[in-house]
Image 1 (cartoon, rainbow, N blue to C red):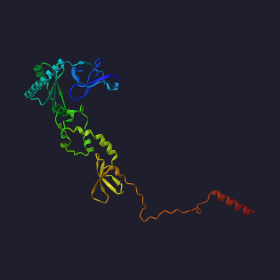
Image 2 (image 1 turned 30 degrees about the horizontal axis):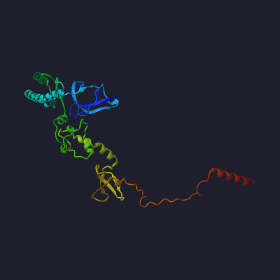
Image 3 (image 1 turned 180 degrees about the vertical axis):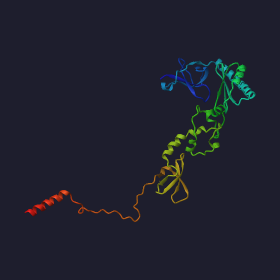
Image 4 (image 1 turned 90 degrees about the vertical axis):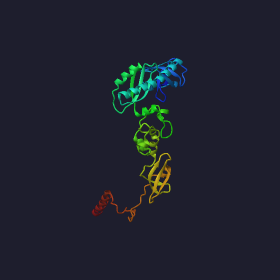
Length: 310
């Protein structure tokens, strides 16, 4: 298994494998200069050298050029300050040209030869004139990248309805699919204001416990099914609490609800009772009335025929 180093280019984003080659002693949070498909970049070590199976490596590994020097760090800080100026310039040009986009961020690469603007837009736009003006003013290669609502919220940061910092900007490195089925599975209110985040999309946390709910609901009674309590009383399931592992029952012949542990109920046993007024079956020995085999009849006929002939 080859040794690789995990490198991350921005906080709380996906990390990538790089070949450390002869470079050793790299620790977490060390700044390194690496070769990427888009040129030379500066990244941060997310995980030191470790062995991984070849199946986890896609394509040819890029390599780490060197550990970042103090001069490299000063250059990176200089370009970080210029990013704010570039973003303000882009805002002014967008407003002046009337282009329906919202500029989110501006990011220089390691040597300042490329500047990437991230933006959101609800429609398809032509920003060729904007790129020309930005290139003329900033004297570097300009790239525009359209991002979604979730990516915008990740870049802007904020706090969720739980009172904590947003998952996407604090620890969630990759977005995962979230569906309305997950909210239904957890018996949550389906009002958009209740299950949507700051981005206006479904809450990412709906997926965190979804697998647990799916597995638990396989063993818990279904709502509307009939069960039998440990006292032998029949009841109908009106609700299920997966977290507490309890069921809400309405007892047969009653109108009040009772909550009991799911382990104390079971499917009702089949009670086989004979119909009212039907006579019980009697076992009668009818050995004498049973027909005799044909061989016995033939023997009797032969004996009779012999007696008559004598």
